[in-house]
Length: 121
Image 1 (spheres, rainbow, N blue to C red):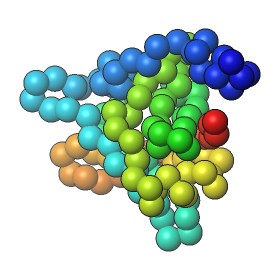
Image 2 (spheres, one colour):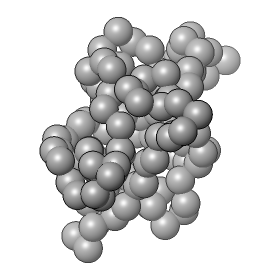
Image 3 (cartoon, rainbow, N blue to C red):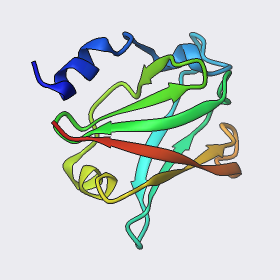
Image 4 (tube, one colour):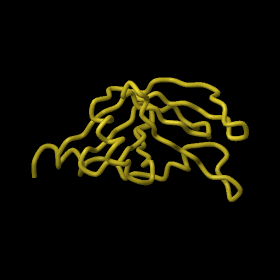
């Protein structure tokens, strides 16, 4: 087993991202959209407030999966792989702009940059 394979094997299990936000119930779920700006920078829009501080994001180039890593070390999966067109921009990014959207109006409420770690196997 290579060092990279060992590091993946030692990682904690990935949980559901909806456990990580306020306001998800049978009436309304979590809506996330990953977009690329004209300058190639990646933006992640979300409509729910996170319960815990987000430490960084991890992106796997092989599977196109994006994971959220919390301050306490918990990992949450975004739920589905990103498209190849978005993935090509992820590999050139060092951070992602996270924008909280008002779920009623669709207006941006706040935003901050989160570090992005890229995994290559």
